[in-house]
Length: 414
Image (cartoon, one colour):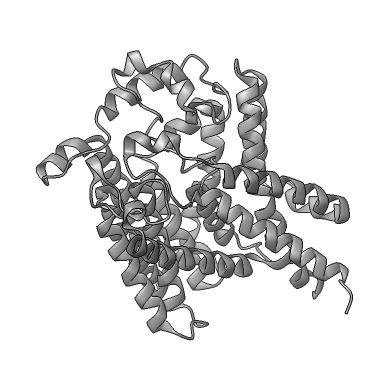
C-alpha cells in the first residue's frame, strides 16, 4: 500500500507535534541534581529537535502551501500583537538575540497552528494528554530507579524533579497534568475514570514531593477553578452565572497578586525557605528598565536570556537569571503595546466564558488552565510569549477557548 498524500500529511504533522512537546518540555536524562550546577546541563537533544522541527516545517509548507491559510490574523489584538513583536525586534539594540528567540518561538507555534487547522483541537488535546501522562509516569519510574538524578540534592535535597531540570518545573508540570485528568473525568468520552483518578493522585504526589510552595498553591487553585467553572455552567440563570463568575475572577487575581508580593513573608510564616528573595526590588528595577523603551520594548524574549539579566545584576543586588514575572517579561520584550494586545487577546477568552456555547468540558479546561497559568505568571517567568512547556500549554488552552476550532475536514463536510 503506497503512502498517500493525506497519510504523509498526518505523519509530518504528528511528528512535528510530538517533537514540539519534547522540545518545550525540556525533559532529559542525567541532569545535574544540584541547583548550582544546572547551568552546565546539556540541551543538545532539544536543539536537535528544534532543528528537525524547522526542517519539517519547511518541507510541510512546500508540499502543502495551503496550510499557510491557518496563520491568518482573525482579530485586531492578534494583528497588534504581531506588529508589536516586529517593531520590538526592529528597534532592539540586540536584534540578533531577538531574531533567534523569534525563530524558536515560531518553531513552537507553527506546528500547533497547522495541526489544529488540519485535525482540530480535540485531537491535539488527546495527543498532548497522552504525552503528559506518559512523562509523569516515567518521571516517577526514573526517580525510583535513578534517585541520584530524579531527586535533587544540596539546598533542594529530597525534592522530586523526575525527568525535568528543576523541581519547580516538575511541580507546575504536575499542576497542569492534573487539569487534564479532571477534564477526562468529567468528559462524556472518558471510558476509564479510575485511570485518570490514579494519574490525578500521582500529580498531587508529584506536586507535594517537588517541595514547591507555589505549585502546591496553584494545584489547589486549579482544582477550585475547575470545580467552580463546572458549577457555573450548571446554573440556568445567566445573570447569576455572570455575576458569580466575574466575582470569582476578581478574588482569584487579587489574592494571587497579594501572595506573589508577600511571598517571602508568607513562606517564612509557614516555615518554608523562599527561593525568590528580593522579588519586589527586582520588579521595580526592571520596570524602570522597561520604561526606557515603553512602547515596543527592548526586543522579543530578550530578558529571558541570563546574559542580558546579568548586565543589571548590580542594580538587583543578586544574580537574577529571569524577571520572575511573566507579565514583566512581555512588557520588557514588546512594551506596553504588546502587553496590551496580549492581555486583550487572553482576557477576551476569559471574559466570554459565561456566554460561550460549545462543549462544556472544553470550556472548563480552557478557563481553568488560563486562569491557573495567569496566576503562575505573577511570580514566575516564561509563561507568556515563550518557548517552553507552560507557554505551549497556554496556547492549547487558548485554542480550546476558541469556538472556531474546527478541523479542515469538519469544515469540508458542511
